Length: 259
Image 1 (cartoon, helix red, strand yellow):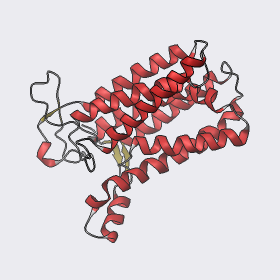
Image 2 (spheres, one colour; image 1 turned 180 degrees about the horizontal axis):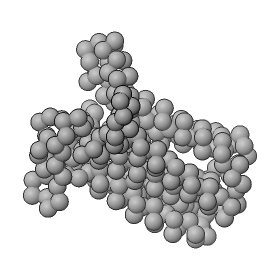
Image 3 (cartoon, helix red, strand yellow; image 1 turned 120 degrees about the vertical axis):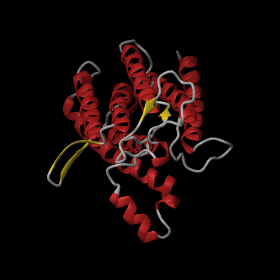
């Protein structure tokens, strides 16, 4: 794998950071390109994008710190030092989604933007950007799978500087990062197609919540990295996925009843 794209002196260009930045740019391009067709002015969406992205990054890091805090060290100082030392890695998608969605809602209300219509435009972009991010995870070795057994297309990490545990280097693993990246691209295509249909505001967003939460719930069974404290045999991400899927179904049925 290639956790670092290139190094020039003390400067390193991490693959994960590059792919995440590329994902943000791709998502922003998609949103701005579709703004006029969705009835928005590009300048009205600028603040919405900025504050949502900023809050999303803070939320993703915050959830990571809360989820894995006990494993960072023996005391507060060592844990804080580890968090700062590995700041370029370690982001929890659901944390970014929750914080980003809160900033999105508050900013949209403040700017007088139709929240649900804007969210429908953003939902496909979110899936697109997330696909880039998961490729970054693959290059860095984070969010990796467990030993793949007889799976026909495993991946093997050999670079000792990647995020895979030393005991799993050289071991065929499930390609969880690539599976999720491919799934996100499929979700993006479905949402983009659905966005062109005349549906109630919020329908595309609900579809995204249902599709991604179902995908994430299933892929979590193949993950081999630290998933946090299990409850009822499920990881924190699976519990959030189950709750998100249930809410999405309820909201979808409500939308269907109205139209």
